[in-house]
Length: 300
Image 1 (cartoon, rainbow, N blue to C red):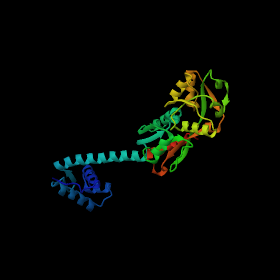
Image 2: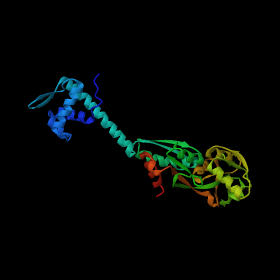
Image 3: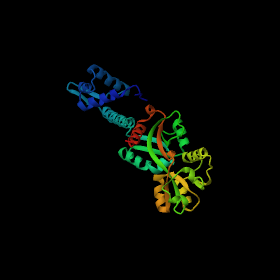
Image 4: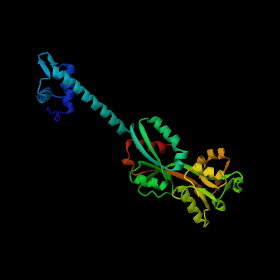
């Protein structure tokens, strides 16, 4: 069995250039090699395959039959290497690859579809893997390298992550149009605590904030039912199960179709920010860096 493992790509490229030009000296010039060194490389290749690859004449060289076969394989190998280099270059430049995002419901419902659509239109070879999670779970996923980028609510403990502003949203009260609070343009959260609530599970950042604020006011949050989605909250509120609190942009389409009223909350905490979080900007893959730059640029 012939062993060619000790031959490098330079020797193959030299052989191809020599065959094309019909001259070892011309092949050597193309690869910036000394003629003597080029001749030795060709001779070593012939020794390795145990057969002459070139007829050497005063006017130049000509391929033998084994040389013709060797030329086809060498060209194929060099072409494959060139394609591999091009693909690796695409990965390193960020034009190709995958980004893992963990995002909360608020960002997915309100902003990410349009924001990611614009990014993916400009980078069609970057694949996005998006997972919806609660904000605290998102922070853990980024910290443990199960996600490249996290999008979560402010006030979520995020020790060890580098964070950037992403988007701002406004929390509003949603109520049936016949509800006593529906006639008001704005209401303090304190006044809503006299009524039963439809809420997300306790682990979500929105439910946690509501519980935190009701505790601070020393007023219990009267939870009648907890559901897992914004849409389900709106449906429950529409049937008279209670009132709810949701981001305005996310609630607006449901309010229109279900006959609900959106009432502004007077409390400062109802104006909140969504954050981008990464472990280390320098450790991000090139595609992830491009995505973070795109999402940060939307703040400008």
